[in-house]
Length: 409
Image 1: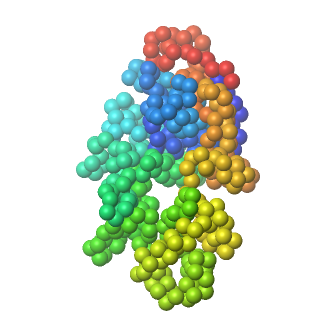
Image 2: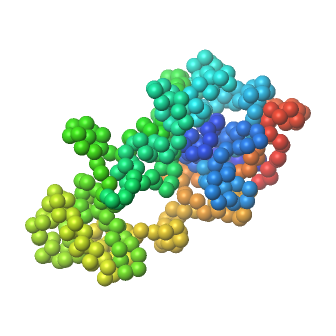
Image 3: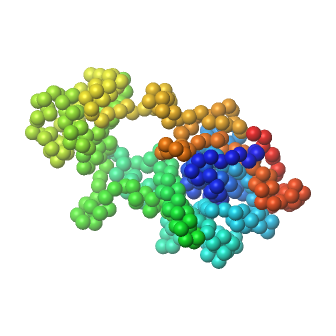
């Protein structure tokens, strides 16, 4: 793939993405969406595991098309001297390096952050993503998002009261860690720009989940009582649940007292709005079974579209519970371009993906292309580093880099 001009607020920022599957690559993808030149380094002969997860689009999975978008993939064998030298030459040109090996693996490759990487490039920002961190009793354990979701209390508090703990059906811990890590990288780049100093970021899946699950740990520490599973309700606010309509489901939230009263007025008029059982949030929580029964009786008499429209017209907070098919047809999602068709040069035509978010008024993010095939940019990147065609060909023959497969596009 020929080098393209990178637009966006992060243009000029070079990122080496050594990580695999989701959390580290998710951070890199977010930087790429806003203009960073992300060079995706994959091992020869295998590639990122995200290429092989779930339904495929051509030779690669839809997951890869998303997490690999806007990146330039190259293949290196870091256990060969020539492959390692290519990486070190890249490091000297880079602003950021992202890895998610187990603690100690980077050092065993001869790439110790303090004694090698930051010597080669003192301004380098190094993101290290693991399940549990670079130190601590669990640091050597395999770290997956599933484990973090379970240990963080998310699974314990998710599900119906009479059901088992429930894990999320998406890579939640990885995506949260990716978003937080992208923020941390930019904070470290700001420090680098002010001082010239690079640094190491120790990001973990578990710590990232602890950052978003709320004050459950603080409450348990103070009271000795843990949150329990209560389905789609909240311990601290009512009404909040999913409610069945005549042809589907909707959700409601009354976290603001004024909004809760609007819901009550829609469901039962002034009599219900002024009912002493539901006068305050504390009252509504204490009488939540009765409250949900009244709301459910109302929603059951309406289609989901009508229920949402009536509540929206009243200024209440409600929305549909969508399937993927319903989501892509939603008029608001379509009007805002929240899901956008992106260039998919290595797949079957264009591909629908989430648009870069949040939206910047002057320098918005953009999707230049979906995730490319393995090694699509190897020749381009090595040429930029000063390697000749003969040197590149020789390294490919020796297995230090992947097979040459020039991508036209």
